[in-house]
Image 1 (cartoon, helix red, strand yellow):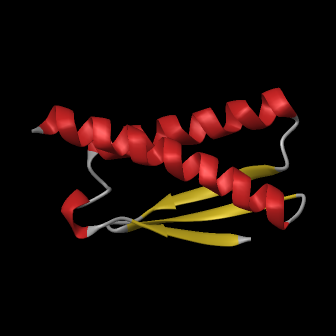
Image 2 (cartoon, helix red, strand yellow):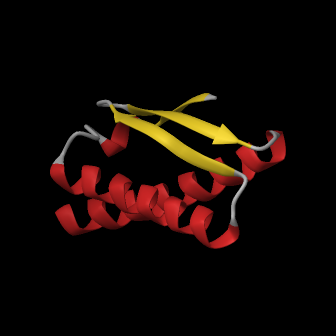
Length: 88
């Protein structure tokens, strides 16, 4: 499945070092959860653009896809918010 996750304008360019690191940490956390639980969804590829992220995701079913993306996006939001707080 191809998933696009956009950020609000206030976040700014995702291709900054701190925000790249934040998204990377969220991706690592998602991979760790997948490995620990035998998960139903995993991120196969990720492309960070200025205002959005493209993900290629493999999932067992719709529910697994929804839960996996929810988990990743919550983690990414927390990491991005933390990175933005440190920048200011």
